[in-house]
Image (cartoon, rainbow, N blue to C red; front, side, top):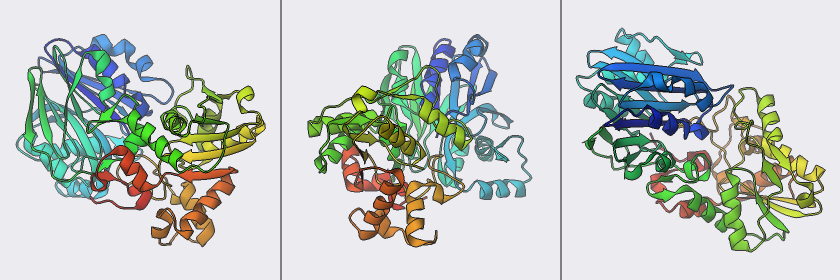
Amino acid sequence: MGGFFGCASQQNCNKELFYGTDYLSHLGTKRGGIATVNKNEFRRKIHTLENAYFRSKFESDIDKLAGNMGIGVISDTDSQPILIHSHLGKFAVVTVGKIANLDELTQNAFLNNTHFAESSQGEINPSELVATLISEKGSFEEGISNAQTKIKGSCSMLVLTSSCIFAARDRLGRTPIIIGKGNNGFAASSESSTFSNLGFETDYYVGPNEIVKITPDGYEQVQAPGDKMQICSFLWVYYGYPVSSYEGINTEQVRYNCGKALAKRETSTADLVAGIPDSGIGHAIGFANESKIPYMRPYVKYTPTWPRSFMPQNQEMRDLVARMKLIPIREIIQGKRIIFCDDSVVRGTQLNDNTEILYEYGAKEVHMRIACPCLIHPCKFLNFSTSRSTLDLAGRKAIYKIEGTEDTDLTDYAFDGSDKHRAMIAKITDELRLTTLTYQKLDDLVAAIGMPKENLCTHCWDGSSYF
């Protein structure tokens, strides 16, 4: 997915920028970058994060990135920030999201004799394309609005100029931007969790399609929010850090709500409730509190050296990392009936490994409770659950085995309670060798978040969305 952090301060803010960006490391693992400006002088550093953490890569660069304004990014895709010389002046851009019509916009740019210098994974760098769209107009405000209008999918951005930072949320607000206020200036971040230890307080949630201009002295609205929102529901289920709030709704509280909703539907008897570390823990606590079944930790996560399980590009290495970072406790597992809560099942490979380990250590029963509905549609709008093949998704793989074809109507499979949905869940349960498997109902997830369904993007579960 990725995340960004920007800061405009009365004094040098390179350290706030460094730590603020580092606090977003859970959102991406491929590349990191920082750009600063001081007295019209821009500085930039970009490093790969595939074999190290953000802090270790950028620690030696902090003093070289002095400036009272700057932007930083953690990315799972392209090299950022992009630094541009244009008729608007010099500026830097970072983006978060996924441009669904990237090829169309690229071809339109070629027709206007535009060229691109940087590429990402063999394609045009999306952030450079955004910079090109900004440069088509006569001002930054008009250029950013131009980009928001033309981009389909999602693309939130921070634009650093010599005089200010522009924070622009994507047209339907799929990815968040939060403004923080500090003693010496202001910050903009993908997550509010970046603020508290850096001396900022959440001051404003940028609306969908809104543009805000930030200076060391304050911020002002450049473009009013749109009247439609489709914020990604998965932010609360998985992506978001527990401390973070979006639209004023705290992530950890939503996870407690999800676990509580699952517990209210529970029919199995168990000895303990557990969560797959880390994002499954909040859901499990909510489940345990509601069900009165003891919460315990049959797995402990070894965090000092093992990064996120999907960090390596090779699937075999991802599976290895997923297994190695979780250490089982035989004394808690052996002979027990265990209810495990997790945020989601994407491909099912990691869950399959976890189940195998539990049985190896003597678990009597393994009941899996998933905090969201079954994923059956690859995400169009962020870099989550994307794949070369839809059959990589556990849900779609099960549907294929039932139907014998990829070309089938998914409507009934998405509806919890239908015969086809039950058949899909039974197939996944068998594949993962679980005692039972229950997914969250979509209505219960929407209620756990506490926003109207029409304001939430639920495409990966029910296929509903609009550009």
